[in-house]
Structures are given as C-alpha cells and as structure tokens.
Length: 84
Length: 130
Length: 168
Picture 1 (tube, chains in turn yellow, purple, brown):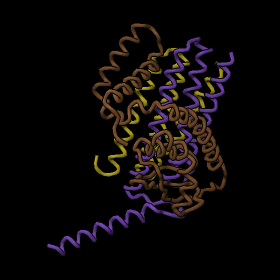
Picture 2 (picture 1 turned 90 degrees about the horizontal axis):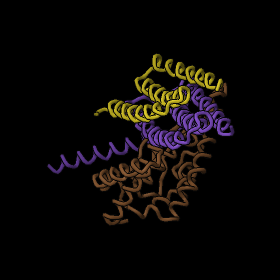
Picture 3 (picture 1 turned 180 degrees about the horizontal axis):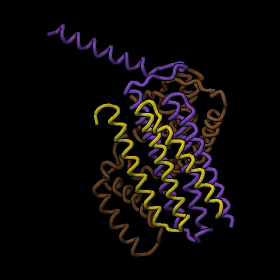
Picture 4 (picture 1 turned 180 degrees about the vertical axis):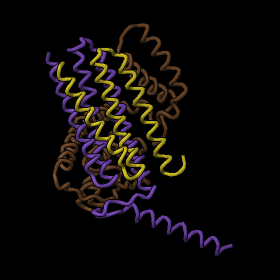
C-alpha cells in the first residue's frame, strides 16, 4: 500500500510534463492534444484515489468524467476543423 | 494476496506508460507524431491502471464489486480514445498545420487536390452549359 | 446484408443494455435486476432502430469465438506497439520516418470499419486520419512502404482476418 504514493507521484510528474506542452505548444491543436492526454491521466488518477480512500463511489465520478472529457475534446476538434 | 501483487504490478505498468506518453508529448517534433506517441501510451496506461485497481481492490478492499465497474471504465476509454485522437488529427490537418519536414509521403494531400480538381472541372462544365 | 426482423433487433438491444447494467451495478440483488430489466426494456424500445442492424445474428457462435480470439490478439499487438513507441521516445536520436499513406480495406460494414479504424489507431505507429469509402488515410510514424498495396499489407491485413468474420 506504500507503493500507491509512488504511483501518485509518477502520475503527478506526467501531468506536469503535459502541462508544459499546454503552455508552450506552438499551435492550438498541440494544446488540445495535451489537454486530452491530461484528462485521460486524470481518469486514471481518480480511479487510484478511489482505491486510496477505499470508496467505490469515486469510480462513478471517474466514469462520468471520462464521458464529459470525450465530449469536450470532440467539440473542440469539430470547432478547430471549422464549423461546429 | 496474489490479487494485490498482480494489481499493483498492473498499476505500476500503467503509470510507467502514462509517464512515457507525456514524455512523448514533449520530445516529438510535430503535432502528428506527438499524437502518435501520446494517445497509444495513455490508452494502454489507463487500461493498466484502471484494471489494476479493480484487481488490487479484491485483496485490499475485499470486494469483488470493483472489477466489473473498472472494466466498464476501461472499455469506455478503449473505445473513445482512438475516436478523439482521430477527430483531433483530422482537425490538425484541416486547420493547415504542415507535416514535419522529415516526412516522406503525403497521400492525403494528393487525394484532396484530386477532389478539388474534379470539383473545379465540374463547375466549369456547368458554366459552359449555361 | 438485409436488416434483421424488429423483434431480433429489439432483443439484441435489450440484452446488451442489461449486460451493461449488470456491469455498472455489479450487484445480483433481485430488486436491482428487476429495475435494470425494466429500464433495459424501455430504453431498448426507444433506441433499437439506431443501435443495431443485424440483431441476434451478432451472437452467432463463430462470430463470438472470433471476437473472443480477437481480444488477446489485439491486446498483444497494442503492447508491442507501445514498446515500439517507447523505444522511439527514449532513443536519443528519435528514429522516426513519418508520412501519410493510403490503405484499402475489404470491409463494407460501418461498425466493422469503425473497429478497424480504432484498432489501427491503437497499434504500431499508425493513426487513422480520414476514411472515405474503402480508402483509409493513415499517418504512419515509420513508413516502410508508400504504395497502396504495400501499406495495406502492413497495416490493415492482420486485423481484417478477424474483423471480416466478426462483422461481415
């Protein structure tokens, strides 16, 4: 169970690295891709937190978050393609 | 006990791929190659972490109810991540971001130019008819 | 392939919805099962027209067997793809050779094409950029063969063996 702290640390570093691409990214699509990866990582993070606090209700939160993130990215992609 | 070890191993496997995906996001030269490295690794990482938690919970929480739910989340991510990657890469192409200078071939441009050529021709013939 | 009868399509939708409900609640309490069946019947009646075209024919044993075989094959291909990508990311010189190639497919079914596109996106160094009819435009991180035939041999053929049985 001590291991879970290390995994959370690795995930935090991964999120920070993608954050760098969000701020830096030369084009808008770069930023959206970085945000997409961040949402995927966040879904995994929520599931890990469910285990950390031993509360199964957080799994539902993760599922709803995954659905909403997917819709958001699709909306962004349609907008960037020209025409929502 | 075995469930805890297998689950922990899967979670470790997943977090390493999360790390690789964000590293790919930083190291690759253009948006297309970034997407290549980032989407795949992030999807496999999620599969590892989420199913790993489901198996880990059998030993750690002592409940079998977690595994089906984590499977649903994993399958959902497996189905939707490629779709959003596809939508984003097409958006990148349509918004005119050039390919990296080291790219060797671009069949899509040839295809689009051919289509445009056809449309122009048909427009001209219509005008000629009028 | 023509459409299956309404009853078969409706039953297929209800079964799929009920299985999803079982997974989401992960609970075999009779009350949960009753309410789940009730909602599956209602939602199935509203959505079966857009949900499926073939109905119960999807449960043909040959299709199910190939679908079950496809899962480990696909997972293995996906892990290999990720190790390949990891090698490219960690290598100091970034050994990449990207480009957009065109592939042909023999699949005609829409769901089959979607599955093929998703499988391509998740496996060795390829992302589907656009699909027009039977032509796939694919961004490939390491172009080995730029011709249509050669690219199809590398990218779409291995999956089509399975998907042809499952979806055609």
